[in-house]
Image (cartoon, rainbow, N blue to C red):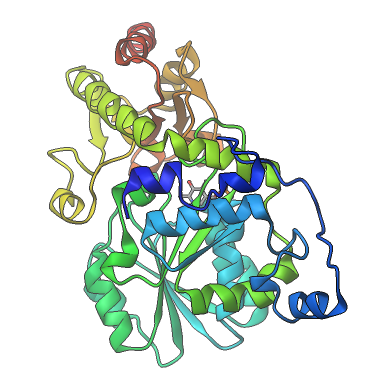
Length: 387
Ligand SMILES: *Cc1c(COP(=O)(O)O)cnc(C)c1O
């Protein structure tokens, strides 16, 4: 399907709402029926009905159609957060005694799901280095139900060979699921590579303006309906119509924003590489990136999120550099208009800092929509004042 059609027309029936270009925010919790027969039919299959906004809502449905089409999926569900779009399908598809193989160091709340919440229900997880497909294959047990991927990772940018892993999973009757937040469907289409379920934090690039928390899950209609009918309705993690409307608005400019972020990131990285204080750069499309070939094979573009290290990785130098930035903001999240920085040390207790630990040294930067020179000048003054 043409991307311009998806972003500008799909799911939008303008004659239903005065030919307005922008769809209405259907801010209603419930919907009425004229006859008991109609009411009974809606209650019997809420997936197909406009009954109650914990399930379906017309504004949400416009968004769902667009998100499914972008992923090349049959259907989509939208959640009130990215982590709900990860947690709910796993609760829906696995049961006591099942086993998960996950990539090492996925998103922080995904780790907590695997380590804290799921063990309470008798579901265990083995973490493996997914950059070598053999590690995943060797971790398969008779009770393995799910292979959980995150490619690229959003701190270390580790990749997995999606097509190869999906093939192995199919041979073993195992469901595959990926967190595709880094790439969005514009830069990576896991369903076309054989992955079953694609989750994404729409808080990031889809929303794009740092004003909505939301999540997306796409997959076959059968799996999506199964998740909707039970755990989705039970957990109650539906997105509000107003937030859905903001995501529809975000989608209109998604290709422009991604391209801008990608292009500016190339310039910022090229500048950083010339600075004597800077040591390593981690970014999937960087010429020195260890999995660059795989990145070019399965990704159509690269996001504005990268990490770097300083040659002097003392706590004092990293803190000084980050504290001196004037325009690049220190905050969690990414994908909005504003450039951001997170030093890994912000998540480490000072006495536990290990200067030899590569993960502790990382400084993650997100490149937003500002001019490249504006960001470079900010980085320059912070480096010069710190060294
Ligand atoms: C932010 C993020 C999430 C969680 O999304 P929320 O919308 O914050 O719940 C999951 N995975 C990745 C890679 C993220 O960056």
